[in-house]
Image (cartoon, rainbow, N blue to C red; front, side, top):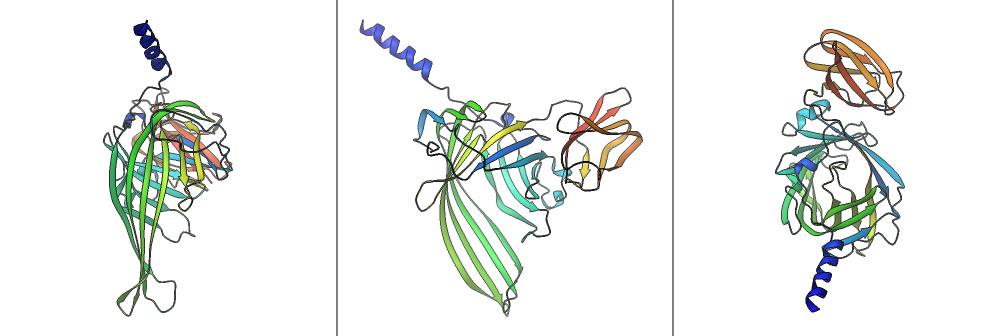
Length: 349
């Protein structure tokens, strides 16, 4: 009788336990995809990190977006700042902020290399991280634990009278622990996930140069904790949910979550052309690896054909997009026998 009872308990546990997953580079979203990310600045009281450990269950279905951001994944060659980040092989564009984010992605890691600001109002044109910040260390498994240190160091002409230059250095010590796994429910659905906890210590130091002498102006130390949930569901390909904690009270301050993941269709014979500027206002330049004869077609997000032009043995094409409404568009280049030669996305401002 006792043996049968133990077997029943083991069976019940096996039926209710969430399988532990592993996240790899193959699970990450491909180029030429679109992500919609919701931001909830007044999160419901039910949205809390909860304990660490195995077989956890999180219900964050009450998350409500106060605002949302769009992110496009691009080849660095499709961006206007690729020359500043030559080691990058993967980029993302956030149209709402006119920000380009540059990564190095391979089977070992996804690393953040730097950020470019494509706007005249930006205080800085770009920043680079030394060394690159590791966002995901593949394969990601429950129990992983690593610490990294990286910094940005920027010197600018001083905007204040009495100083020649201003130097700002931000050093971050970041400890990442994959401290839990289990089932996560968001407005997008329910997924098996891994949770990572990031504890950061940030050291901010500012100097002013006066008559060729560097004088310390300020030095601050800050700490922060955040949590991120990842899945190996290939239809998602990105962080499902994140929570930032308030440093002084250790309460939830902000959350963001994936609203939609629109992934590109993989075709072994299809490449992305080089396009610029992206986003485009009046015109778009499209460059091909070799001369193309066929058709260039432009589709809106509803899949409707909005523009089509003929190509005749061309290595490039200058396309007017001034009359298109603002939004995200898909371009496809077809050969004369209707094979898809190139495809990708661009943003019309």
